[in-house]
Image (cartoon, rainbow, N blue to C red; front, side, top):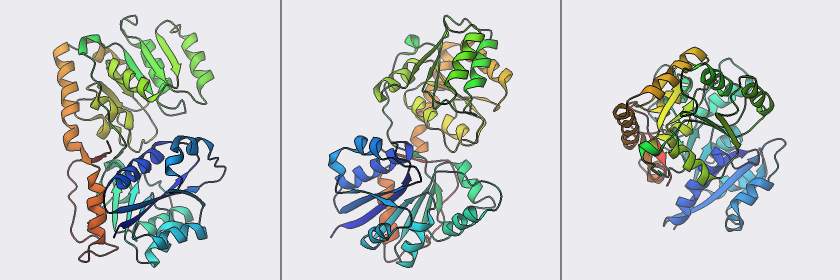
Length: 371
């Protein structure tokens, strides 16, 4: 008899990080013996599903369901399930599942904001109802459990896939930024720092992938600083091209100033044995790993110094940092089977359905590697 797993996540209709993670876990369950899986996406206000449905394709028509928040359809899926795996602390999924005595695993992607509001109070209450909590970074974990870790919590960053193309070190060039062009992601700081850095910009070009609301101001600033010849802005690229760009640059730069929950691109860079420069912001130092160069968030002059340090680094030290970042991933990541092991543990007759039986250490961060 198959174990029936319902994975619930809110969606805005794009195929973003949470959607990719959910579908990776669902595919693994679908390919595994003994599991029957349903993915339930809750539509948030203003959600349009065209992009998401197009990305999912027809093969998931019978297993992916789109429902309204706090709906009868959502509760019907919970009644069907043996176990709920919920993304973030959604009360309209957690409370009914708790009342139905379904074991609950919560993957918590976002840090807990400060201050008490009715919404945050409800989410905090829901945090106490789940049987297991996976926080996607130590930073996120500490915002939810600041005094001491609860015995049924652990740190499991949500990595969907990590291909690791390798480009020889001597064939790499320049700096790379990858992400949405939105405030506090560090794009403006990076451009200013790049202009100030005393480096050979012909030998050290800067590539900025992505797009977003800041496009006009970013391109205007590049022109004002006279950087058009050395700063490339290709826009959004395919997944294959993104991987090629990460593997082909010398350093990936993620210098956000926004309390980043985890930071995926530094992990992707480490998997390709690429150097990483990150700010001391949220979970970025964790995802940057032990080989990263660290800068203070929002400090343009310090970031310029890190670019100079990277550009002048001896080949031996550069390679050592890249290898150290790559090899430490084996300690940082966990296999996707960690999820099925956790499901079985929660479903075990000897396990409380709403509390884990033994403590989890708070040693190093770990992540799910969903290959």
